[in-house]
Length: 106
Image 1 (tube, one colour):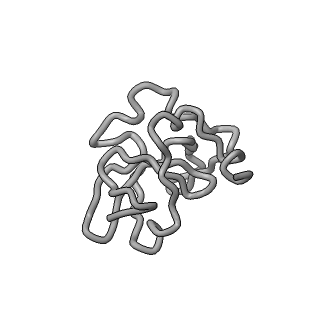
Image 2 (image 1 turned 90 degrees about the horizontal axis):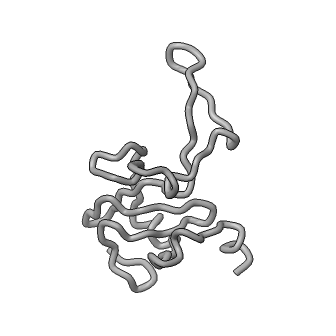
Image 3 (image 1 turned 90 degrees about the vertical axis):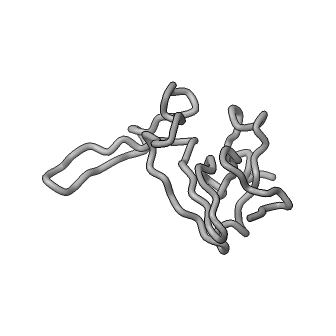
């Protein structure tokens, strides 16, 4: 599986516009990733409801242990072939300073 001519492997970092992701598994036509630019803290409302706001967001790149896995403390999301065509690979040295606002200006 490739994006921008780069073969995905576990640990590849990519963006989907406003979000930054790290690949945790690669399949034949899909990949699995955790979002690494923001963690939304969910708070219980009732038995089956939760709520979250951006004020509750934390940057997992700055929280030790959040990106250790598997298993991961963060939810994993599946991307299919169509999703992968739209992602941008982020080089390892740019992950710590990645900014979605700067991405939008380019």
